Structures are given as structure tokens and as C-alpha cells.
Length: 357
Image (cartoon, rainbow, N blue to C red; front, side, top):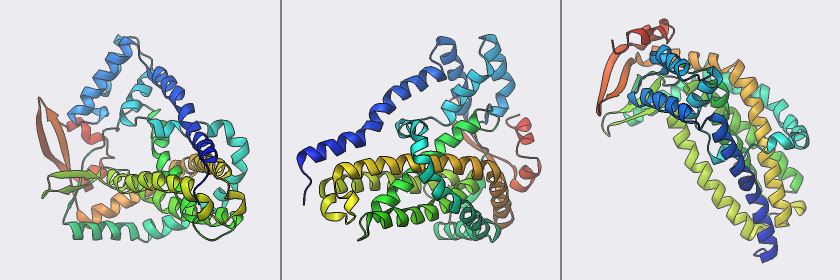
């Protein structure tokens, strides 16, 4: 049965309310990052370095000197660099109202987070310590015949705020997976309580697996496809695989739930489209608080261990080379630098002193 026009419009307005709130926040963010002429001048300097394909640490001293020349404070440098490396878009600003509503959704987030943390550690043990993720990477490499190489990350040498922005930049997929799980489970012939319970269980499994994978692949490791002339960082490979499915899936599921939800959903509390739209926002903001917790507890405390362990497993498995992928005067160049085993031993930073010399 199709929802009534009035109920449909009301539920649609409720779902669009985060968009209306996100627009002024996005403008405020743009102002906070910097829109003055000298700030735009520094932004262009950083963009030129990134366009060249070299990590920021290569030109760290020059960029700092330029900032002092135009009287730019260090925190403003950090904002501009982070905005270029990890730009925040509308989907990020949709999550900001959760900071206001956290007293309301915080209890629900805590109920889900408490069992998630030990399960996340279990998933890490299975995928990293037992080398299951490296087995998956090896299977992908054998199936696709891609090469595994290393290309230094551009954000190496960025200012400290970069870590905060990197966390915010990662969050939409973590958050939208919760909404995705909820919309899928709401099709099941369950009561409203059991829909929420099963959604939470599915969300814990999904977020735990995805968080470990994303932490592990946040390195210089790259898939190189010579046949199609394509280079894909491992973390981008994960993002590209997840993003379209989650984004398109959410649009499809939400539109179908709004149009035919009363005949699809069996839970009495969620039969009304307005009540369902409110529940969608509560799930969205609850998942945001959970996403913040995952960033603080897992990525901050375990992310570095997961990344280095997986990277070392890839080095022992493939013995990849590290290359520089640079651009100069419109000319692209891929230059071998050193074996990744040596690059890792040099602590992944000292090697930039010989880059392009």
C-alpha cells in the first residue's frame, strides 16, 4: 500500500532536515578553513606540491617559510592542508547534528559500542594476526594479475590537525553502514524491537570488518594494473568498492521504504512513515556517535599496529618496490626508489630526503 501524500511529504521533510542543517555548516567550515587572499595563496602553494605527486614532507620547510612570510599561523596551515588532503563534503556535514543530539542517542550508541569493542579486537586477531587479510590480498593479486607496489602517501608530513580531519573523512562509510544495515533488516518479518536488535548485530559485524580493513590498507601499498594503465591505492580500492554500493543502496532502500514502507515493514512502531523517518535519523546519529567511538578507541589505539603489521606481511609476501609517481610540467614519471623492505626500515620518512634529488 502506497503511503498517503501528506505522510510521504512529512517523512520526506524529516529526512531532508539534515541537509538543510548541513548547508550552513558547510559554509561555516569553508570560512573556518580560510577564504582570505593570503590563505588562498597558501592553499595554491600546497596544491602545487600535491599536484606534483610528492608528499608534503618533501617541501615542509618551504611551506612553513611561505606561511611565515604571509603571517599564517600553524593551525591555519593545518586546516588548509587537511582540507586539501581530506576534503569534507555534504555527507560529512550531515553528521554534525549528532553532536547536539548525543545526550539522546548516546545511550543507544553505548549499548552497541560495548559489545563491538571486543568483537572488533576478535576480527583484528582473525584478519591481521592470523593473516586472513593478507590471504585475501594475495587472492586478489592472483586473480587480477595486478602488481603490488608502494607509492608514498601525499599526506606524509602534513600538520597535526590532519589526523583529526582524517578521522572525520573516514566516518561517512562507517556511519552509513549502520543505516544500510537498518534498512535491509527492516524488510524482515520482525517486530520493531527485533529489527533494531538484528540491525545492531549486523552493524557490529560490518563495521568491525570494514574498520580493520581500512586501518590495514591506510599505507603506501598500491595495486598496479599495467594492462589497463591504472594505479589504485589499497585504501582507495576499499573505498571505491564500498562507496557506490552503500550510496546507491541507501537511496534505493530509502525511496522504496518511503513509498511502500507500510506494506513492507511489520513492526507496529515503524508502520507510520513519519515514525520511520524519525527512526532513520536516530539510527543515523546513533551510528555517528559509534563512528566517533571507533575512531577514538580503535583507529587511535590499534590503527598503527594494524597498518604496520599488514604492511610487513605484504612486504614478506610480495617484496614490492617503492616508486615515485610524480608530475612536472605536464610530464608524468614513475621512478623506482627502493625496495619497500628498506623503505620500511628507514621509518617511511627519511627516504624523502633523497626523493627527486
